[in-house]
Length: 184
Image 1 (tube, rainbow, N blue to C red):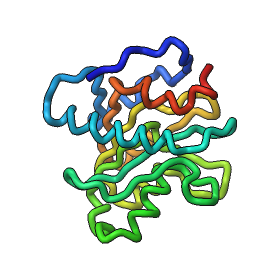
Image 2: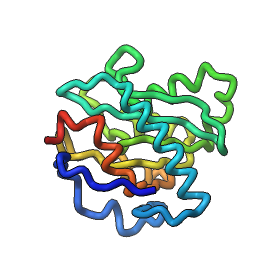
Image 3: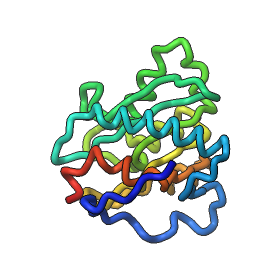
Image 4: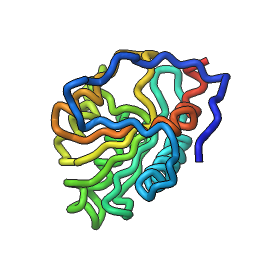
Protein backbone atom coordinates (compact mmCIF):
# COMPACT_ATOMS: atom_id res chain seq x y z
CA UNK A 1 0.00 0.00 0.00
CA UNK A 2 2.30 2.78 -1.18
CA UNK A 3 1.39 6.16 -2.54
CA UNK A 4 2.71 7.65 -5.75
CA UNK A 5 4.66 10.89 -5.41
CA UNK A 6 2.61 14.03 -5.96
CA UNK A 7 4.63 16.19 -8.34
CA UNK A 8 2.78 19.33 -7.19
CA UNK A 9 4.30 19.14 -3.72
CA UNK A 10 7.74 20.71 -3.47
CA UNK A 11 9.35 20.43 -0.10
CA UNK A 12 12.80 20.94 1.30
CA UNK A 13 13.53 18.72 4.27
CA UNK A 14 16.76 18.24 6.21
CA UNK A 15 19.09 15.85 4.40
CA UNK A 16 21.61 15.20 7.13
CA UNK A 17 21.19 12.01 9.17
CA UNK A 18 19.39 12.41 12.48
CA UNK A 19 22.31 11.05 14.46
CA UNK A 20 24.66 8.32 13.36
CA UNK A 21 25.26 7.24 16.97
CA UNK A 22 21.65 6.55 17.94
CA UNK A 23 20.15 3.24 16.90
CA UNK A 24 16.55 3.83 17.99
CA UNK A 25 15.64 5.52 14.67
CA UNK A 26 14.22 3.50 11.76
CA UNK A 27 12.91 4.44 8.34
CA UNK A 28 10.18 2.35 6.69
CA UNK A 29 10.17 3.13 2.96
CA UNK A 30 7.99 0.32 1.63
CA UNK A 31 5.10 -1.89 2.63
CA UNK A 32 6.57 -5.33 3.18
CA UNK A 33 3.18 -6.75 4.17
CA UNK A 34 4.27 -7.38 7.75
CA UNK A 35 1.78 -6.99 10.58
CA UNK A 36 3.92 -4.19 12.05
CA UNK A 37 4.00 -2.11 8.86
CA UNK A 38 0.29 -2.70 8.17
CA UNK A 39 -0.58 -1.45 11.69
CA UNK A 40 1.64 1.62 11.24
CA UNK A 41 -0.06 2.40 7.92
CA UNK A 42 -3.53 1.98 9.43
CA UNK A 43 -2.84 4.34 12.34
CA UNK A 44 -0.97 6.89 10.21
CA UNK A 45 -3.94 7.03 7.84
CA UNK A 46 -6.10 7.96 10.86
CA UNK A 47 -3.57 10.65 11.79
CA UNK A 48 -3.80 11.99 8.21
CA UNK A 49 -7.58 12.20 8.64
CA UNK A 50 -6.98 14.28 11.76
CA UNK A 51 -4.57 16.58 9.86
CA UNK A 52 -7.29 17.15 7.27
CA UNK A 53 -9.51 18.56 10.05
CA UNK A 54 -7.04 21.38 10.76
CA UNK A 55 -7.93 24.72 9.25
CA UNK A 56 -5.10 25.64 6.84
CA UNK A 57 -3.26 28.84 7.70
CA UNK A 58 -0.21 30.53 6.16
CA UNK A 59 1.89 30.57 9.33
CA UNK A 60 1.79 26.95 10.53
CA UNK A 61 1.49 23.37 9.34
CA UNK A 62 -1.67 21.26 9.56
CA UNK A 63 -0.74 18.10 11.44
CA UNK A 64 -2.69 15.16 12.83
CA UNK A 65 -1.77 12.89 15.75
CA UNK A 66 -3.11 10.00 17.74
CA UNK A 67 -2.02 8.21 20.89
CA UNK A 68 -2.24 4.42 20.76
CA UNK A 69 -1.75 1.70 23.36
CA UNK A 70 -1.61 -1.74 21.75
CA UNK A 71 -4.39 -1.50 19.15
CA UNK A 72 -6.50 0.89 21.24
CA UNK A 73 -6.68 4.61 20.38
CA UNK A 74 -6.41 6.67 23.55
CA UNK A 75 -6.94 10.09 21.96
CA UNK A 76 -6.55 12.08 18.74
CA UNK A 77 -5.55 15.63 17.97
CA UNK A 78 -4.97 18.07 15.14
CA UNK A 79 -3.34 21.46 14.78
CA UNK A 80 -5.28 24.32 16.39
CA UNK A 81 -8.02 21.97 17.63
CA UNK A 82 -7.88 23.41 21.14
CA UNK A 83 -7.72 27.21 21.50
CA UNK A 84 -4.29 28.71 22.19
CA UNK A 85 -2.24 27.99 19.04
CA UNK A 86 -2.02 24.28 19.91
CA UNK A 87 -0.21 21.62 17.92
CA UNK A 88 -1.54 18.16 17.09
CA UNK A 89 0.57 16.12 19.53
CA UNK A 90 -0.13 18.68 22.26
CA UNK A 91 -3.89 18.32 21.66
CA UNK A 92 -3.74 14.51 21.73
CA UNK A 93 -1.81 14.56 25.02
CA UNK A 94 -4.10 17.16 26.61
CA UNK A 95 -7.23 15.27 25.53
CA UNK A 96 -5.83 11.95 26.79
CA UNK A 97 -5.85 13.28 30.36
CA UNK A 98 -9.65 13.40 30.39
CA UNK A 99 -10.23 9.89 29.03
CA UNK A 100 -10.75 6.64 30.88
CA UNK A 101 -7.50 5.47 29.27
CA UNK A 102 -5.33 8.28 30.69
CA UNK A 103 -3.36 5.68 32.65
CA UNK A 104 -2.26 4.10 29.34
CA UNK A 105 -0.42 7.18 28.02
CA UNK A 106 2.87 6.29 29.70
CA UNK A 107 4.42 3.65 27.44
CA UNK A 108 2.09 4.43 24.53
CA UNK A 109 2.85 5.17 20.86
CA UNK A 110 2.25 8.55 19.23
CA UNK A 111 1.47 8.68 15.51
CA UNK A 112 1.99 12.11 14.01
CA UNK A 113 1.93 13.18 10.38
CA UNK A 114 4.89 15.50 10.95
CA UNK A 115 7.95 15.53 13.18
CA UNK A 116 7.09 16.96 16.63
CA UNK A 117 8.31 20.52 17.12
CA UNK A 118 11.42 21.20 19.20
CA UNK A 119 10.73 24.84 20.04
CA UNK A 120 7.77 27.24 19.97
CA UNK A 121 7.61 30.96 19.31
CA UNK A 122 4.44 31.04 21.39
CA UNK A 123 4.60 30.33 25.11
CA UNK A 124 3.46 26.74 24.56
CA UNK A 125 5.77 23.88 25.47
CA UNK A 126 7.32 22.17 22.40
CA UNK A 127 5.61 18.91 21.40
CA UNK A 128 8.85 16.93 21.76
CA UNK A 129 9.08 18.08 25.40
CA UNK A 130 5.41 17.17 26.03
CA UNK A 131 6.03 13.71 24.55
CA UNK A 132 9.06 13.12 26.78
CA UNK A 133 7.21 14.30 29.90
CA UNK A 134 4.19 12.09 29.08
CA UNK A 135 6.38 8.98 29.00
CA UNK A 136 5.49 8.04 25.43
CA UNK A 137 7.83 5.21 24.38
CA UNK A 138 7.66 5.39 20.59
CA UNK A 139 6.83 8.06 18.00
CA UNK A 140 5.89 7.26 14.40
CA UNK A 141 6.29 10.25 12.07
CA UNK A 142 5.02 10.58 8.52
CA UNK A 143 7.51 13.25 7.45
CA UNK A 144 10.37 15.26 8.90
CA UNK A 145 9.32 18.89 9.33
CA UNK A 146 10.07 20.83 6.12
CA UNK A 147 12.41 23.80 6.40
CA UNK A 148 9.52 26.18 5.60
CA UNK A 149 9.53 27.86 9.04
CA UNK A 150 12.50 26.51 10.99
CA UNK A 151 15.03 23.71 11.30
CA UNK A 152 13.22 21.34 13.62
CA UNK A 153 15.19 19.15 16.02
CA UNK A 154 12.20 17.19 17.38
CA UNK A 155 13.40 13.77 16.28
CA UNK A 156 16.85 14.42 17.72
CA UNK A 157 15.35 15.48 21.08
CA UNK A 158 13.20 12.35 21.23
CA UNK A 159 16.10 10.05 20.35
CA UNK A 160 18.34 11.67 22.94
CA UNK A 161 15.60 11.05 25.53
CA UNK A 162 15.62 7.34 24.60
CA UNK A 163 12.34 7.37 22.66
CA UNK A 164 12.22 5.16 19.58
CA UNK A 165 11.31 7.04 16.38
CA UNK A 166 10.08 5.43 13.19
CA UNK A 167 9.84 7.51 10.02
CA UNK A 168 7.03 6.00 7.95
CA UNK A 169 8.48 7.41 4.75
CA UNK A 170 6.15 5.44 2.48
CA UNK A 171 3.26 7.79 3.45
CA UNK A 172 5.30 11.00 3.30
CA UNK A 173 3.44 12.53 0.34
CA UNK A 174 0.03 11.87 1.92
CA UNK A 175 1.19 13.39 5.20
CA UNK A 176 2.28 16.54 3.37
CA UNK A 177 -0.97 17.05 1.39
CA UNK A 178 -2.82 18.96 4.14
CA UNK A 179 -0.02 21.53 3.78
CA UNK A 180 -0.01 21.85 -0.01
CA UNK A 181 -0.77 25.58 0.32
CA UNK A 182 2.60 26.07 2.08
CA UNK A 183 4.73 23.80 -0.10
CA UNK A 184 4.11 24.85 -3.72
